[in-house]
Length: 262
Image (cartoon, rainbow, N blue to C red):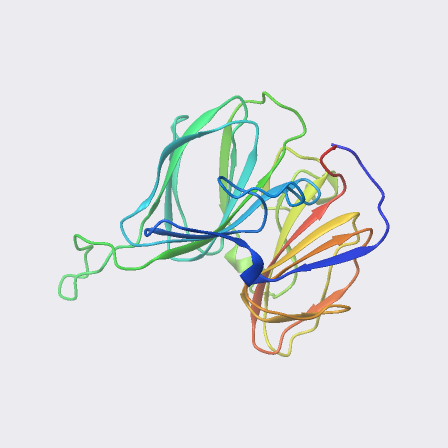
């Protein structure tokens, strides 16, 4: 990674221009090159390498598979997702709960849709899944390779109710006392805001690299205009822009002070 200074640049990426994977049980849209989708001009922004917008149908999910040397943050928008890994960690991820997995020297994990139908008489779980799970999964490179794998999750729904930009995951010393979960990258922080109509604008952090993603709803960004669900803006060379909404929106902002060396 290099702590680079770049001239100011705003790059708007529309939702419909993303790479798409339709596996029947999985509807996935990729902001960057991923799996069989490869574009040498679209491999990362700053230290962010993956921003996958995934919907998994009831009763399905990702079977056990490996990862190595990557910080993986999962943010659920709707439904719930069960995580299990080879280090013995397990948990259910749902809206408002921050989750990070450090792959490090190597880890196996699975992610499955955890939505169950409730029996109308007993109120207990019935035998079938009924609701899809919608989540954003993001990967950033760690500061160094070969760290010990790890897992962390924490409920932050209460903090999001205020409508401001909330540090969700960070390795930056600046957010040491404020971020919900820690990632092994001292140049990066992920923020989330749940914007309500009529609320005061939020101001984007000032950083060499920003990735602003509209996960739900519609927002308006200073200098850009209207951004719909799934739209993203890649900023280089500065921030400080204001973001508002007339209809309600949930946005994910990666603040990055380094980029992956060419």
